[in-house]
Image (cartoon, rainbow, N blue to C red):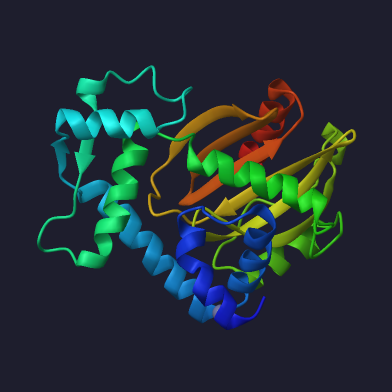
Length: 249
Ligand SMILES: [Zn+2]
């Protein structure tokens, strides 16, 4: 994907409104284009500032009813209509942001699935579909780690756990939740495990959290200023065992 096309799609990408293949090619471009990466980071910072600071106002009943009736049937029932809220951008915000505010208000009414989980599961699936599992295909941790460190501003745990049944396959550059990320790839029997490491906005330590989505298990935690996310279709217990190896490595 060329720069002009990528630049044009950055907002749609940040709003997760483009399809899986276009996301793939856009991400490939962004990973290697400092200008697009900087712009995407600005867009995402604006989005999260809006999410945090947007004042919430009670929607008039007629509007709440309209929003509720516009929602897919399966999403509507758990939300009592009188509790629907509607956010709007205040006068200090540029008018152009009003559309964003409207989108956010609606997504706030029915919180979507955790975007980070959705993002890493999509990455994981794509890494296998697109035959782009590794940029540096080797089980040698002394090759993978410096390769990643040279290209990213971070130094994640990279270790071959072959003796424990989790051989290292290699590494690649990726992009997770608005951050450039190292993807360290392992195998468990015939299953692939992608371990993502990136510097998140919040660098405080966070304990393990397990989520499941579409048959994939996702374990995330933060330690030493780095966010880690492991994703695989191996059983949760096996993925957690892997995570404990990484943590103790
Ligand atoms: Zn570009």
